[in-house]
Image 1 (cartoon, rainbow, N blue to C red):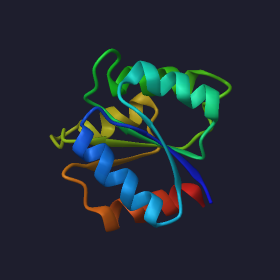
Image 2: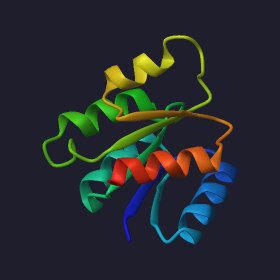
Image 3: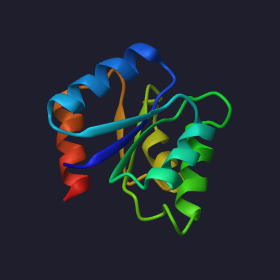
Image 4: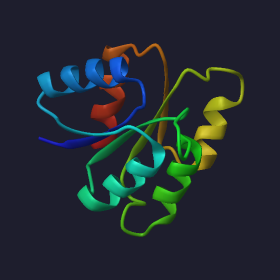
Length: 120
């Protein structure tokens, strides 16, 4: 089964998402900030990245840009997870390099559908 890198600073969100993804058979690697997310993306080459956009150290926007500019990680599908659901935020996520966008609070069925589509 696929490996997912979950980049999320909120412990409750990390715990809930990782447990639910693992129940679906995915292997989950976790990072707590954008800097760690960039490092783990390059080290593990996950099949998919779920990126919170409001992160400490390096925010999700910049972490996404760095991942998508790196030839070693640029092909990894990346879904933005954000509480930023204002007009234009989806476009901002896509411009940063995200392949898809989902809002918080997470609707797990909807997110799972996006994960499965991204993984092909």
